[in-house]
Image 1 (cartoon, rainbow, N blue to C red):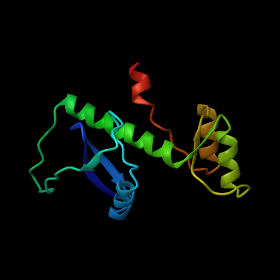
Image 2: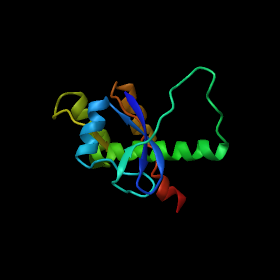
Image 3: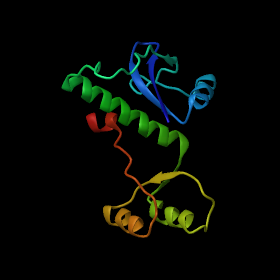
Image 4: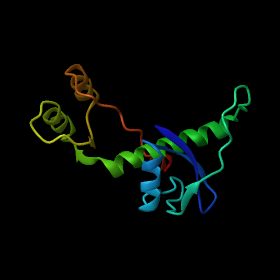
Length: 138
Protein backbone atom coordinates (compact mmCIF):
# COMPACT_ATOMS: atom_id res chain seq x y z
CA UNK A 1 0.00 0.00 0.00
CA UNK A 2 1.09 3.53 -0.70
CA UNK A 3 -0.42 6.73 0.68
CA UNK A 4 -0.37 10.00 -1.25
CA UNK A 5 -1.42 13.42 -0.08
CA UNK A 6 -3.90 14.62 -2.70
CA UNK A 7 -5.43 18.00 -3.44
CA UNK A 8 -8.47 18.90 -5.53
CA UNK A 9 -8.90 21.95 -7.74
CA UNK A 10 -10.83 23.67 -4.94
CA UNK A 11 -7.94 23.30 -2.49
CA UNK A 12 -9.27 20.44 -0.34
CA UNK A 13 -6.44 18.20 0.83
CA UNK A 14 -6.91 14.52 1.66
CA UNK A 15 -5.11 11.20 1.63
CA UNK A 16 -5.44 8.55 -1.02
CA UNK A 17 -4.49 4.90 -0.39
CA UNK A 18 -3.42 2.85 -3.39
CA UNK A 19 -2.15 -0.66 -4.02
CA UNK A 20 0.98 0.83 -5.60
CA UNK A 21 2.07 3.90 -7.60
CA UNK A 22 0.80 2.29 -10.82
CA UNK A 23 -2.71 2.06 -9.30
CA UNK A 24 -2.59 5.79 -8.57
CA UNK A 25 -1.39 6.55 -12.11
CA UNK A 26 -4.15 4.41 -13.64
CA UNK A 27 -6.93 6.00 -11.56
CA UNK A 28 -5.59 9.50 -12.23
CA UNK A 29 -5.37 8.85 -15.99
CA UNK A 30 -8.88 7.37 -16.10
CA UNK A 31 -10.36 10.31 -14.14
CA UNK A 32 -11.48 8.03 -11.31
CA UNK A 33 -10.10 10.17 -8.48
CA UNK A 34 -12.62 12.42 -6.75
CA UNK A 35 -12.45 14.73 -3.77
CA UNK A 36 -14.41 13.24 -0.84
CA UNK A 37 -15.53 16.73 0.23
CA UNK A 38 -16.73 18.32 -3.01
CA UNK A 39 -16.59 15.43 -5.55
CA UNK A 40 -14.31 17.44 -7.84
CA UNK A 41 -12.55 15.19 -10.36
CA UNK A 42 -9.60 17.58 -10.70
CA UNK A 43 -7.31 15.78 -8.25
CA UNK A 44 -3.54 15.71 -8.17
CA UNK A 45 -0.75 14.82 -5.78
CA UNK A 46 -0.03 17.47 -3.16
CA UNK A 47 3.41 18.28 -1.86
CA UNK A 48 4.55 15.77 0.73
CA UNK A 49 7.18 16.34 3.38
CA UNK A 50 9.59 13.48 3.95
CA UNK A 51 8.92 11.42 7.07
CA UNK A 52 11.77 12.23 9.44
CA UNK A 53 12.06 10.91 12.97
CA UNK A 54 11.12 13.45 15.62
CA UNK A 55 9.72 16.06 13.20
CA UNK A 56 6.03 15.15 13.37
CA UNK A 57 3.97 18.06 14.60
CA UNK A 58 0.81 17.33 16.54
CA UNK A 59 -2.51 18.23 14.98
CA UNK A 60 -5.38 19.90 16.77
CA UNK A 61 -8.43 17.82 17.62
CA UNK A 62 -10.32 19.65 14.85
CA UNK A 63 -7.63 18.77 12.28
CA UNK A 64 -7.54 15.14 13.46
CA UNK A 65 -11.33 14.91 13.13
CA UNK A 66 -11.15 16.41 9.64
CA UNK A 67 -8.49 13.88 8.57
CA UNK A 68 -10.52 11.02 10.05
CA UNK A 69 -13.65 12.18 8.22
CA UNK A 70 -11.72 12.40 4.95
CA UNK A 71 -10.30 8.92 5.44
CA UNK A 72 -13.71 7.39 6.24
CA UNK A 73 -15.31 9.14 3.24
CA UNK A 74 -12.54 7.95 0.96
CA UNK A 75 -12.71 4.39 2.24
CA UNK A 76 -16.49 4.20 1.81
CA UNK A 77 -16.27 5.71 -1.67
CA UNK A 78 -13.59 3.18 -2.66
CA UNK A 79 -15.78 0.26 -1.54
CA UNK A 80 -18.84 1.65 -3.30
CA UNK A 81 -16.89 2.09 -6.55
CA UNK A 82 -15.09 -1.27 -6.43
CA UNK A 83 -17.59 -3.71 -4.96
CA UNK A 84 -21.07 -4.93 -5.85
CA UNK A 85 -23.95 -3.81 -3.64
CA UNK A 86 -26.07 -6.84 -2.67
CA UNK A 87 -28.28 -5.16 -0.05
CA UNK A 88 -29.90 -7.35 2.59
CA UNK A 89 -28.73 -10.49 0.76
CA UNK A 90 -25.19 -9.83 2.02
CA UNK A 91 -24.98 -12.77 4.47
CA UNK A 92 -26.31 -15.20 1.85
CA UNK A 93 -24.00 -13.91 -0.92
CA UNK A 94 -20.97 -13.83 1.39
CA UNK A 95 -21.54 -17.48 2.29
CA UNK A 96 -21.96 -18.48 -1.38
CA UNK A 97 -18.66 -16.81 -2.22
CA UNK A 98 -16.92 -18.29 0.82
CA UNK A 99 -18.06 -21.83 0.04
CA UNK A 100 -17.33 -21.52 -3.70
CA UNK A 101 -20.98 -21.69 -4.78
CA UNK A 102 -20.71 -18.48 -6.84
CA UNK A 103 -17.93 -16.44 -8.43
CA UNK A 104 -15.50 -14.70 -6.11
CA UNK A 105 -16.02 -10.93 -6.08
CA UNK A 106 -16.06 -7.99 -3.71
CA UNK A 107 -19.49 -7.26 -2.26
CA UNK A 108 -21.08 -5.01 0.34
CA UNK A 109 -24.56 -4.75 1.79
CA UNK A 110 -26.50 -5.02 5.03
CA UNK A 111 -26.34 -7.54 7.83
CA UNK A 112 -27.54 -7.56 11.40
CA UNK A 113 -24.96 -7.77 14.16
CA UNK A 114 -25.95 -11.42 14.73
CA UNK A 115 -25.61 -12.23 11.01
CA UNK A 116 -22.16 -10.62 10.90
CA UNK A 117 -21.08 -12.51 14.04
CA UNK A 118 -22.32 -15.80 12.53
CA UNK A 119 -20.37 -15.12 9.32
CA UNK A 120 -17.19 -14.43 11.29
CA UNK A 121 -17.66 -17.63 13.32
CA UNK A 122 -17.95 -19.54 10.00
CA UNK A 123 -14.65 -18.07 8.86
CA UNK A 124 -16.14 -15.66 6.34
CA UNK A 125 -14.09 -12.45 6.12
CA UNK A 126 -16.35 -9.46 6.80
CA UNK A 127 -15.80 -5.92 8.02
CA UNK A 128 -18.15 -3.10 8.88
CA UNK A 129 -18.30 -0.33 6.30
CA UNK A 130 -17.97 3.13 7.86
CA UNK A 131 -21.17 5.18 7.73
CA UNK A 132 -21.63 7.83 5.06
CA UNK A 133 -20.45 10.84 7.06
CA UNK A 134 -22.48 13.23 4.91
CA UNK A 135 -25.70 11.30 5.66
CA UNK A 136 -24.89 11.10 9.39
CA UNK A 137 -24.24 14.86 9.51
CA UNK A 138 -27.69 15.66 8.06
